[in-house]
Length: 213
Image (cartoon, rainbow, N blue to C red; front, side, top):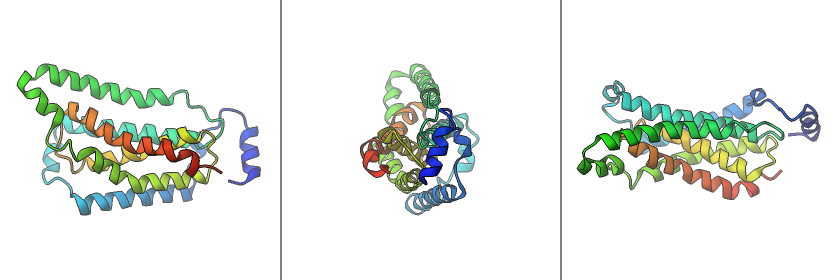
């Protein structure tokens, strides 16, 4: 971003609208990151063969809705934190609300289940790999978002880096859900979230260095 553009942006007042973004170049950069992650998922893991059948189940759409809502919240956080002076007071609510929904659903499922079944509902069969696969799939998207943010003017660099990682992790979780056999809210609400938080933490660590301008 040019200095004159930044001066004009700051002069426009504290409520800088994130809706003016992204530019065509930023959209293309992030779209390329998404495409690479999709290709990675297809080549490394593949789409679950019964996807058409499970797509008829409410639990599948609860999973998709959860990660898609987090991806949208992460996108909004990244956009707003890329602009000095943009309002971020609603960001915590946008991020926390999907988590509360999935945790309430998980609590209901666990309380309704027989005690001997609760461990399986939480651990599933892929807990050892799920968070790390999500984190791995997030890397191309993460890199693309960081490149896009560097073309803008983030000022809260650690928070902006965390937002970039969160958005990338949630987008990767959405892609991974096309492969993942797990359907229970108790699994999704913990292990998927852990996978999203891995790039979030990395973003918070590297944000001050990578996003400095």
